[in-house]
Length: 233
Ligand SMILES: Nc1ncnc2c1ncn2[C@@H]1O[C@H](COP(=O)(O)OP(=O)(O)OP(=O)(O)O)[C@@H](O)[C@H]1O
Image (cartoon, rainbow, N blue to C red; front, side):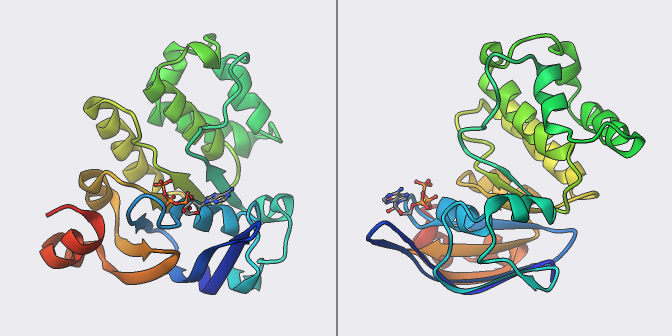
C-alpha cells in the first residue's frame, strides 16, 4: 500500500472532527472519499498533509510514519495537495504559476511540464493570461497542473468538479484518468457520476469516521448504501 491510515483522530481547536479514519490507498489507483457535507473529507486530506495534524492514530506513506511531520516534510516525501480553493496566484500568469511550482528546471521537470500541457492544452492557449482572469474550469486545471509539474507520487485532490459546467467536469475527469498512469490519486468528490467514472475504490466517511469501503463497481450497484450516506440512488 502506498498510503495507510489507521484510526486517525483529529481535533481542530476544541472540536473533535475526525473520530477514527482508517483507509488504504494502493499505488496506481484513484481512491475516492465520499460522504455528506461536513463528514470530514477535507479534514482527512488536511490531516494527511500535516495542515490539520492528527492527534491519534497512524499515517504511513511508503511504510514510513508521517503523522508527526510538518507539511513541508510531507511534500518533500512526494505528496501533493490540490485544495478546494485552488491555491493559484491571481496576479501571476499561467506560465509563472507553473514555473513557481517547478522547484527544479531539469530535463525530468521539463518533461513533466510537456506532459502536463498535453493533458491540459487549454493552458497553452492561456499561457500569458493572469490566474485571476481564468474561468473556474481553467483555474481548476491550472491548480491540478501545478501539482503535476512537481515530482509527486501521491496527489490529494479536493472536489475538482465543484462549480464547473458539465463539459468542464468531463474534461477534468478525463485528465484524472490520464493522470492515473503517473500518479496515485486520492479524490474527494461529491459529484457521484464523476466519482464512479474515475474511481477504482471508495471510502464513505460519516461524522468523522470511515463507515464503508470497497471497489467502486460494488458501490454503483448498492442502492441502499448510496441512499443512506450519499443521498443518491
Ligand atoms: N477550522 C475549523 N474549525 C472548526 N470546525 C471545523 C473547521 N474545519 C472543519 N470544521 C468542521 O469539521 C467538520 C468536517 O469538515 P470537512 O470540511 O472536513 O467536511 P467535508 O466532508 O469536507 O465537507 P464539505 O463537503 O462540506 O467540505 C464540519 O463539521 C466542519 O464544520
